[in-house]
Length: 290
Image (cartoon, rainbow, N blue to C red; front, top):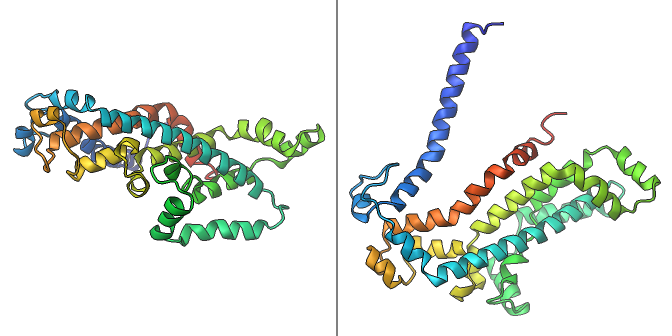
């Protein structure tokens, strides 16, 4: 069956809009990659778009030889893995419990969880709690524990659990499985899409987070790599001698150094996303079709 003229026009317009959005999304990243391989003079002259000009890899060599950069990278890996694992444990267990309509105090618990989405204690009470009361200054726990449970993610997972067939749990209970056994052996295997989506949300958020490190981790050797990048963008870091030789000026970090740092920081997330794309797309469309 051939498409009508109106259908063909719709497809052309639809594809054109999608291509424009793809270009607007990809172009800034391609420009950053091009700037990371270009000379500072070409960048400042406005000659670099998506093709490198004045090919230069000296900054890559200089930045990758910086010990602080790799210490921060290691810290980011530790924070991301530990925080994501803790977040998924708390989110999954809390969401499964709250999905039970016969849970005592369920309405009150939901209200208390939702309340924290709109009202918080503020930065100063959080700072005093973490640094003074808990004594976690210059401790990675200060950026792992406080934001471990995302309420929005909790509500998404709770809704997903509520939509699973109750007959599966009833049959498992008849076979003698406990609530924990039902969660581990029945519910979680059916929840791969939403779990993959939540892991991606938490991991990307933890990878890019820097504000908590600014509050609780004054020691540069304990900071995540996002903080390293933030300092570069703000021209606040002390440059190594190799970076100075590559063309960066003290107190005025050049665009090339910033671009190299951004590429090295974002590359792992960009490379990991295609492997999680199938589950991510399935996860964000959960509940859209009944």
